[in-house]
Amino acid sequence: MLKTIINAIHNREHLSFTYSGLSRIVQPAAVGVSHAGNEVLRCYQTAGGHVTPGHEWDFCTLSNMSNLVATGKCFVGNPPQYKRGDKGMSIVYAEL
Image (cartoon, rainbow, N blue to C red; front, side, top):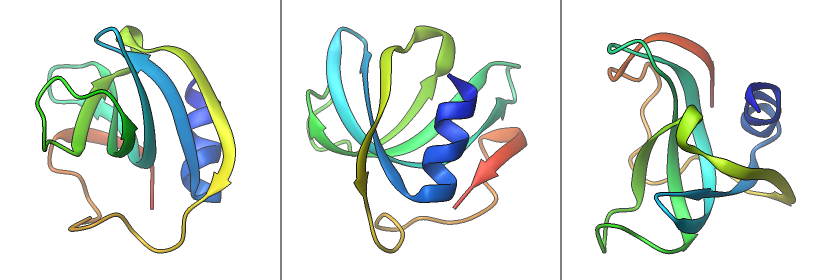
């Protein structure tokens, strides 16, 4: 899973996965370890269900994700309001 996410970040490729029972399509922005010690993905959701409507940025715990696949569809540029050096992570494995 981690390798798929890192490759998707480097290739600017959308990811598809299930989280909180909802299917999502996202632009991965950063992956690493949260301050709580969990491996996490910071991503911008472009399609699928939302737990909180209008909430496009997500901070997903990798252990709670399922059915992860790289879609083969690439995105150009950074997601809206993206900033390098995610402050929610103590360690960043990869970022845009």
